Length: 266
Image 1 (cartoon, helix red, strand yellow):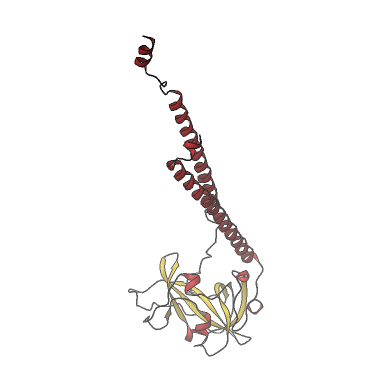
Image 2: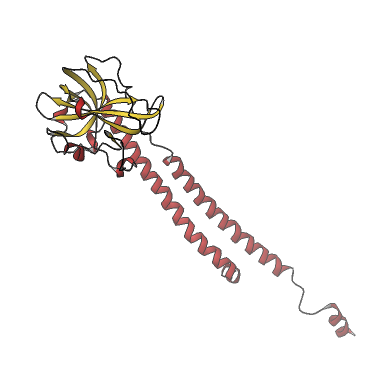
């Protein structure tokens, strides 16, 4: 038995099983951890979307940042649109395809401004055209929207680009954009849900990108099933090798040949 189990071929198979079994187990727990993290993010998003609106100043401050625990919270603000410093966000999705999002500062009655994504508009005829933007209403407005943290290349996967047409940007880097504005700016920005008075026409509202827990839980189960298959395959091969060795030994010829036994009797 030891000779069979510790043959070079079986030693190589043992080593392979000892490598892949712990790896598959670890990959299963890694996917389980990802599922737990994503489930927590889904729960946070749903809870924040369902929460009652609060003034924007309760969740952010000038020069501050929006915590991940406050993302998606519904906030309210009152102020005046500053269309002079309006910007267009390139390569943004809408119900009718890829276009622009309109980013307009709202100067609040308290003094600081908050950057507001007013919604999606269709692109121009070419990639470098500046499309026609529905104007923001003049005078005082009351808005309600979803709070978002400042964008970066790391949390969006988008890259800043040089040479863009004037007034067009790739990401909402609030700290950088605030440097070019003539007033203090709250951290983070707001995705507009509604405003009063409501303009007509208006950009298409930005849809909620609802998070989901993904397939990580099923992937975790799959890795653990692969673990059981690997162990089962190892047991099957060991038993087969032992059975074949036992059959070979039981079927071996006796020490003397028939001719030798006949000659001895003669």
